Image (cartoon, rainbow, N blue to C red; front, side, top):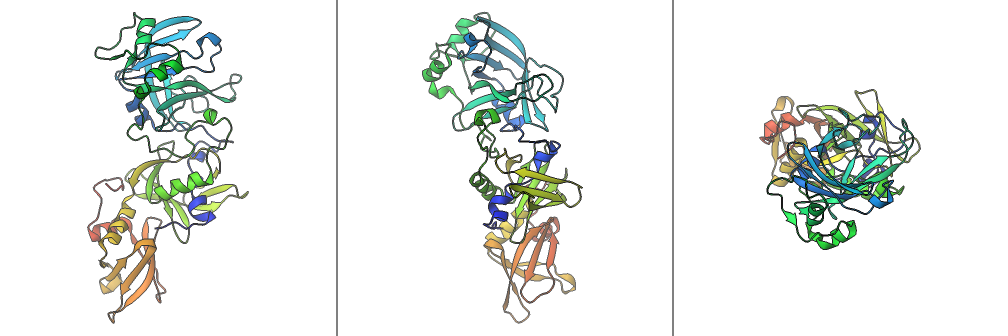
Length: 405
């Protein structure tokens, strides 16, 4: 259904109060990685991450290219520059899911699992599909405090190993078949970029599926991560689609003419709970009040947005998509009389045939996992659970989790 273009409609509905509170209602914005762990694992596997450490404590190490090859078996082969010396290393790498940061990257496999309160060797990473830039961020400050975010590494991913690093670390046992990039003969980051602009992987498959503000708090340097316009565009594209929280909970955004909702899905794709989106007390964001969970979650405009798009159209909305596209009446079950013939239109309009052969106007909308139809002159609002409706009209999607193909 087309979203209302009001502050509580298209724009403010995007200020949803969800995944931020899955991280225990931390004060201030959380630093969500731009994509999930599966995306980054695929991006890095059997590829080379070239990077610099712009904030290294050693001035002589800044501006120099580091290279790490990420083998599918978890082996990390690296050529790095520390304390004025080039070093060849063979360690471990991994990417893990995090309910606090969405995704964390680790080189050298420090620790067993990422600590939800502190990074401890696991760092959030960010990929920009337009530039191909891949960077990581970490926190400074005294031990036990979060401190300030800073850019830990800055670089890109490519399919080849630079000639400069092969010369710098000649004893590093590179994988058989890994091509050497003869164009990249400089160990200086800016020169290496200029020597082969096309080496960086751009618009990697799935990279368009990222939430507003997923650029890193350190990279944004204190600027507002998300504007109202950013969120308006995001919601326009994701109304009726499946979104995913940092903890992996799947949800559906449902913008309607009467109210805006968020549906929480269970493991089978059924609607397990519904949250109504309401203005926050200070008017700077939106609160989501779940009907079953005793929690009220809040999102503040300007913070990174917690819910990541999946690109999946939820099955309920796919049903009405097909009914609208068909352009002909559909017979739906209606009490003891057997059925009612309804024609669905764009924008939530519906027409029904009356007993005299004429038509009744009305509106349709989705709420709490049900399709609601209100017809002029009828006191009763008709409602059908979406899976029952889909089975009746023969449009159950193939996916078992409620997402349309």
